[in-house]
Image (tube, rainbow, N blue to C red; front, side, top):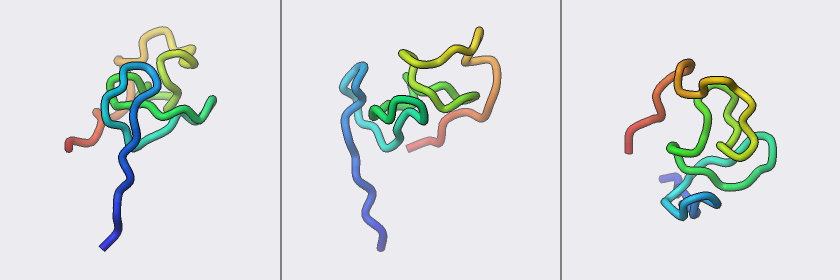
Length: 58
């Protein structure tokens, strides 16, 4: 069994299992762009919610 480490989002403090590909800070699904995988502090997309897959459930 693989253990999943859960960290805290650097923006809101919610549980996070992913990091921003640009600054490498922990980011929850609400603060990680689905298109470029950057956190909301680093994202340069005009409309980050318009593209990409929805974040995985759970």
